[in-house]
Length: 65
Image (cartoon, rainbow, N blue to C red):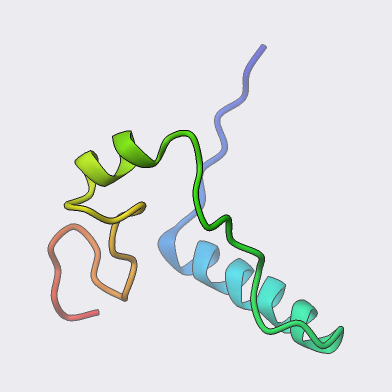
């Protein structure tokens, strides 16, 4: 039986910060990213030419960050 897990935006950001801090401890700057994938065409079509949505602090159109 599948179980739904819910976290808040703040919890997700805190987890991401913790993962990045762990990487820094081991001398790594950031998680590895693929330069391309088999889904590029679909992703770029969905996200205005980018491979992912903009996660630069705004959420659901909220420009306050």
